[in-house]
Image (cartoon, rainbow, N blue to C red):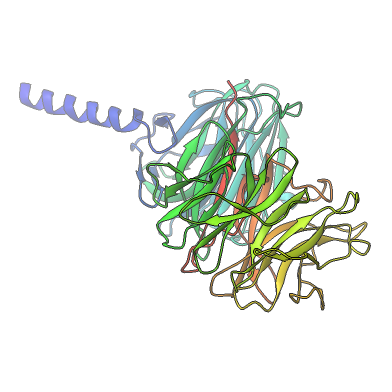
Length: 505
């Protein structure tokens, strides 16, 4: 009898440990509402995918039963992830994001849920013990299988968005909850709607972002945290390889495919593509670098933009490190790309006192720079980058009254073609090494036309080099420093980028 009691105690202890221990980025791992069958969760470090299992009679009515992975978050947040059920079963089973006032089964709550039949909807409990509600039928999402769900808090307003893979997020509900405390429980949830059944789901690309406040002061230290991420652009799976409670930016994929190059604190560093030790790159006397750096097509030279006290100019040096050689001496000049002949660079610059930028190219050996655009026709141009075959220079440009879009032109500046035509502000086209794809960053409408600010909800998108409908490959909080430079892997399957989240205590 004593042995059976000890065995039972061991099992209960193991279950408690399994439910209370941290799983991935989530500090709490629990059943809510005492469901008949216990739930569980695990995290695959290699793929950074969660497997969450749970039962419970429902997430509805005046009380809930479900399994919950969550953190306590103070103030505003943006949480985003991909969700997918395992197998076919009850149409009312639910997975998604949830914010709760407490662990009480009848707590104030709000969430965005994918149901077993594909219905995606926002739902909430406005007061403790009240019946759960949802929007009117005409604002529910269609009964199709969304995978991407986002929940955002702005003060006491909670916004649910969803998207089919490859499409922009769309708002499906918005609700003000006056009784949700400033510190809420926020995380991913699963409920089976059948107390005798344990359902399973996979969740990936889970990100918890806390945006900077509206009165954010960019000159005040300690606000921003950064994640270095890599992503397979064809399946959308993202992996965080490095995090830091301060700013770093703009990864290049190194030619050997094993490391990334990025800027931080005015210098350049490398990090293995699977994370690990960071090493500083020797850039000689250039110690005030920005996020405009790029590697020559032959993998031997490094181009940088450095402010040597008189403004930014373009320099080159061996990729292995050394003292840089100046290419330009007239600031401001910001490097963006190499010619495939490894002898010329393209950059944007202001000249002759004009407060607008044009695109220029110049030999790294000296000589006169060649102006490729005339900004009396375009309001702003930026981000010039050669295609690997040398036939085109891709860039972003804006017309007066329009939005920032992607363009390309011949290397002599002729035959300019517009490639994107949408409501977003598209920046920094980066061409894959195989010459087939463009990866770029898109800002929402409403930002200043010629600006690519930090700390915004942005999308990374992918399209063929010759044009066509772009598709979304990542939803994130970032902007300036996220994708300023070409970050394609040598095999043209992955990109690297930086995402952000506020860290101020």
